[in-house]
Length: 256
Length: 235
Ligand SMILES: Nc1ncnc2c1ncn2[C@@H]1O[C@H](COP(=O)(O)OP(=O)(O)OP(=O)(O)O)[C@@H](O)[C@H]1O
Ligand SMILES: [Mg+2]
View 1 (tube, rainbow over the protein chains, first blue to last red):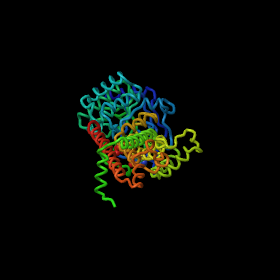
View 2: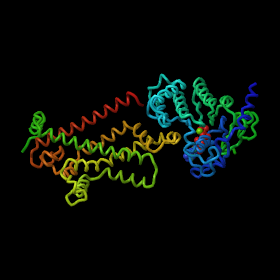
View 3: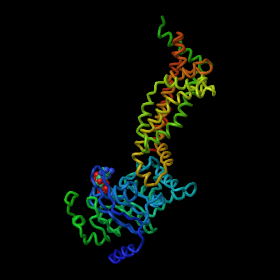
View 4: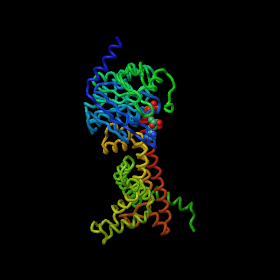
């Protein structure tokens, strides 16, 4: 039963249009090529996981795709064209270490709403809904920076969803969370995906990958080692890097 | 010869018998200083935030300039403003020389670099934390600066305080452009200088004590405000 569902989703996704593409993307810093000729396609409505060891370049790749860093070579395409300001407005990102403004929880949400041009009564309504969704209503007046890690992640996710993005980048959103918080985050992501938001997520968690992924891009030392439907990559990995990963063997960047 | 104890007690008598003359001088001091600090913040806060949060050509030079101008000698500023405002200067027709406004202008020139340079430091640190989030949200320059200044407001109170300290204690520039005219441009510092040279030490010391008290009170009030506001809502 589960397999049929898993098999169907990629097929359905494969027919949808490319939302974001990377063509031969490279990034160099300090004389090192940290991202090396990455090409990939993110399809509208898909859930793509970026996996790979610490230091493989996952966070850097997200930054490049999101347009926070200029690539040294190659390009990123948004709906087939060079990203403009509408692309920026249609994307949002939850960072590996969430950035909280030195304001209350509510003020963090209000700020994001204001920046999307939502003000007045509508802003109050939407902020209230976001608080409720993230289970943060009781903490609305607390300074965001004193929240626990899990609460901060929920706030960061609620804030990222506030502008109704088309594409959501998540960099290990649950890496330091307990199962209950992880479940809350995952259900928020699920709900967003059900509304049509395209998801690109970095994760190290195999269980989470099985629950949340359609496609996997496996990075190794800044290069795409393997890409394909989740089931295929995790069950029948072709690359040595992904195979070592799924078998739980140590396989570091220097092994290559 | 004078005895310090005698002068001290006479100075306190002067303060306790608070008269028109005294209140005039203190009030003008505060008016000039607070106006100058206000104007300096109006210019220095956005300028400092701009330099702190954005990379642009000339940013390095501007930073060096601001830091250097923090140590501007007041008499040089006084001379510069004097030349600008004197009858034959470019702003001569405005007839501002020897008015409180001239003193405000001179002090604003002195204090603005302090406010801007310190603001730059504060904003740069905060922007280091916020930059990626702001970029991700696609914020425009204006919104970035407004958000940074707002979130740094408690640190910036200390910045304004540093500007206040510099302005209220300053004597060289206001003496040159204000002229220390009785009932018109006489402030605490210039009066202290004048009365000391005249040997009128009681009045000079009384004003000195008042100046010190004002500095202490202003600092205490701002610090208390800051501490309670930070405690109440923000970490
Ligand atoms: N701006 C930069 N300048 C120089 N090196 C960098 C820069 N950013 C990242 N790196 C290096 O690039 C490599 C990849 O970093 P990245 O943060 O993308 O790893 P990651 O795959 O997200 O790892 P993790 O799983 O630990 O989060 C690391 O070795 C890192 O030290
Ligand atoms: Mg990372």
